[in-house]
Image (cartoon, rainbow, N blue to C red; front, side, top):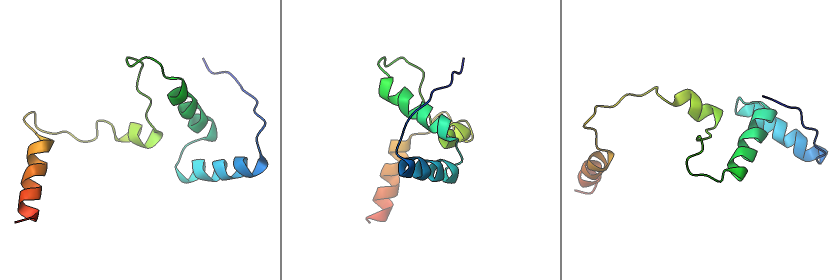
Length: 82
């Protein structure tokens, strides 16, 4: 359940935060909520909090079951530094 919260902040900070939020496609409220959730996270089993950008990307890429990023990265480095 969402609740309202009133904060008193420096007007310059507010304007910069609004610009940042808009340029990243997120509301200022959501940005502050995500920040506070990360600050107050105490249990490793809590639900992960992702930025809106990451949340939109989750599940957009599927990899084969036998995919090994370490193996692929090793192969990449071997080729690069031949």
